[in-house]
Length: 220
Length: 89
Image 1: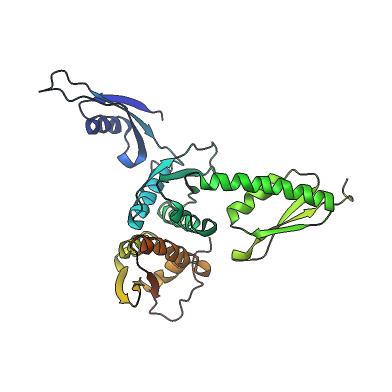
Image 2: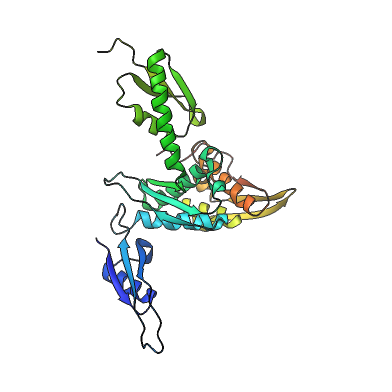
């Protein structure tokens, strides 16, 4: 499905028309006001509002929309936490298993990240839990706060390459600090194609961490 | 804070109508007592207590926003449903 643009006297009216045309509900679409209208006197000289309505269409599962519900759940949780912030849907990569990325934006959101991103992880975990219970399928929702996760992942990739070089030159393995699954994954992926080192997750639960091992000279 | 726990619990159990959260004043804040249908206890605790832990993490944030403290207690009627059931998929 593609996005459509509708003009009407009010934003609500335009959205209603668009929804009827798309056959979707409000929670299943993203609405952008393309042009603000102007309310003239008794309809004289007034300008219509123009909105662009885009179906979220994420992991569309027989008409039900995972992305739309995830956004709603996130917004509910934020409001119950007493944190004024807005939720933006990020660009999604193609593919059925692709993550549905959300970025939360607002002021002073450090409290939402927590120590080592623990609060953010809990938030993401619960959103996925709620959405997957509802749809009886994996949700794949990734929640970020002001691009925090993105920056963290980039610094982990940098760290991984630096440590790989170190392992290569010293021949000695290194073990990193314990990390959540998503962060370990970033490091595994970053070094996957390295001809010199290999990575391994060791330990259980919260203390699970990555070891970077030298492949040695024996391999051809 | 009560509403937060209620919302999460109702969203993940099989019997949302049987979810109750009672707020009890404590020395330095409140204690939230969460009770669900016996079969749903595992659903609000999770494997290795993961769900309960995530709820407590968010509850801490909600409490900080209100300048107070809150503790979450999960009331279990049946002694055999411990912290380990459910959520293996």
